[in-house]
Picture 1: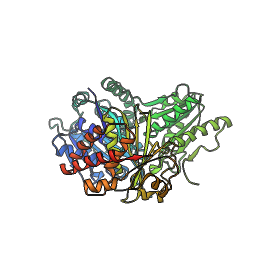
Picture 2 (picture 1 turned 30 degrees about the vertical axis):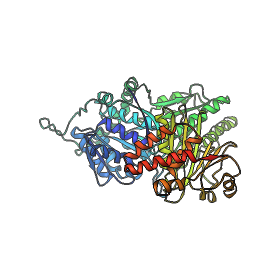
Picture 3 (picture 1 turned 90 degrees about the vertical axis):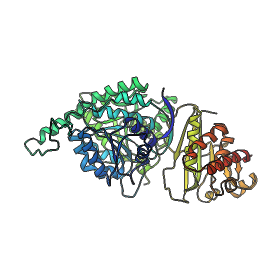
Length: 395
Length: 190
């Protein structure tokens, strides 16, 4: 029987971690850490979670500890946010290219300066090229479900890559909402035991990991990593299908909301997708064919599938909670543009890129409503005058 | 209960609005309804004006944002009306629940509240008399569920007892339960 729960995003993630039962949880316990790591520590202290909890002195060390533990054959997890993720930067590609199975909860929060602790996607978007799988979550339920699936994906013998699972800071991490939890036993059976391919502690079959590879072999290592990440998309879907049978909740690479016959679309990640759904419902009642594409799996990027889902729309806005300063646009916009360049399809929507909600700036129904109004105006004009803009900014 | 009730709390950092919205949301969800308790997305200094939000519904909703058109405004600290327009975005029939020891007519004049339907409860005095501290959040929770009967008093008392037992002594838990009951009983409205 599923358990009805009233939890914050942080509580929900901590609950998932308790049920996942990592062998090792290594986390920096102080700011910018969230109460998620504190709750996991409480579970261990109370004796209800049998995990080696390592309260390290920095995020650089938390990721180092997780990499070592994972390669030794342990199920290893951590959590961080904002500049904490930035501080473990050096270790992120190491975790990925060494093919560890670390799973990390990321509470999306802004980078300084100016000093800000609220929601932006600067942290995980900055880490998009580190070779990790990235999953994004609209609410506490999705954060809980994604974390459990992430462990199954990361530990799969055909994948063996680390996964970061993201939710919006404060808007989701600190807000209480309703969700359903699985039974402990179901999660345990779903995940099974972690079977590492080349465990470091297997003394009869000694292996070297993290060795030096100079110009002679470095390229081959990176190519294998690149292919593994691209191929992981099948397993991510496979795990989603298995999880749907277990939980009754369906997940895919992205969620299409009223998109099939839509003329005006918004592409968005995380909590603002919820607000956008409410605006789509309102516009549909007024006869406007509005739709939404909410990306769940951002790395590997489901390029062909997204092109297929968007190609027949008239105008699309890609809304992003971060800026790729000086770039063509923000990360997701750039990816979707490149996906259309690569695709053989002739159909293609007009597409704009808006930066929104930086540093926790609230994005409400009115803000999203204005975006759909812009898209209709662009359609009437038949051309884009400004393809990149900051929403909600004082001029 | 209508489909969606949106409640905006105005208080100062340290008066317990965050705890109140979260505890209320948990109580409503345990009663098998849908609810959300959101902190404000802004400064969290002690004494600074802050907002917090509650949404209650019989159906699922996906509004992960602040509340600009509240059905109910809860004013935990009336001195905030000098700094913030607490009636911003309210409907003609929105309810304003004010923590104050004045009559309904005096409140409307003193706080210069032009719209909405006013309810008063002297939550700070109740808190002083029950808890011995001016913490108005728990009596205000009791008053709120009286004027927005989304859950019964018993459901709220059960949830507060469960949560507070983990943090406080039984004397403090009992005092808070008494404060909630008095808030529920003593609130009066136009």
